[in-house]
Image 1 (cartoon, one colour):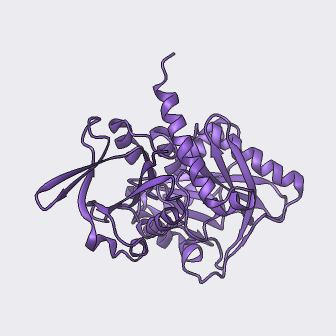
Image 2 (cartoon, one colour):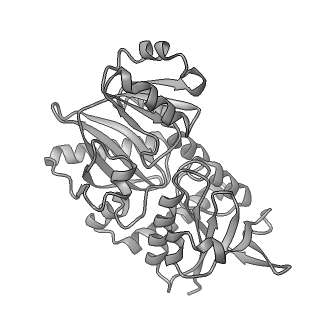
Image 3 (cartoon, rainbow, N blue to C red):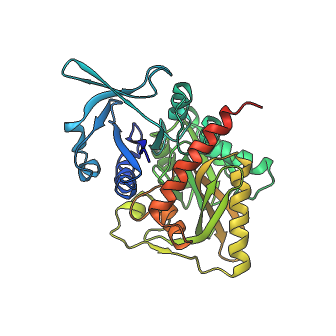
Length: 359
């Protein structure tokens, strides 16, 4: 059987560039080499594209950039693949499916999906609109509210407004303290601050404003952090849920990736059967409300006192590092990493064929 040609697209111009490198390394190492011909395509922080053919281990360290060959994705549907520019010669490598592993803006927000739609290349994960909606935490929460799904109360502030601190304080009065200040369009908890009182608000706003013009201020909940992986197109399925016990006050960027394993990932989450099923059903409802395809990790906050579940956010390109919840939850649910990747690639092809089907 002829191997499928898979382009794993990593790096990117977001604050989550390094996380993407870690995810890509894990994915490439777990793709079945007997089934797939793998092309490693990296994007630098400056936006330069390269085809990389070297040691997979150099992706995580960033050394891949020194050995990459300048490249672009095909400029038209005539070139459904990778075009390289090396020593005055052009090369062309046809691609069957692209696996984007670009976390954050310019990768998870519908932009790369739009490019792949224009080039008519199947790709893993959500479409343009759903990607954009999930990347923007404000629109995600508005969809939740429209669908009658529980999510913490919030207000929206723009970068140009943060000098008028008194007006913002009035805006957040009904939320109370603690609250969370977040960039609307970012992941991996980059730029997020837990604000305990009014005095901490200015610093939190300035930090979040470094990453986005639109900021989300959300009611703080004394909560357990629960996550659930969803897989599928028209008929999605949910994994068992897991719980994160962060090493820091909440599961921030350092706790996720650089705490030396001090944060605990409890799989399955220690929940009663009925609560576990409630998490899974809510995850599927959120997935369908956002019209998702392929995969997503749905994150919940569960009130420690009442047990009430709140939808926090949805990640359409969740982390795939060696410690990431998305593949770990599926592994414990009975889908080993390599099988999960097979299913995601098949779902991408299924979604593409469904879109192209004539009725």
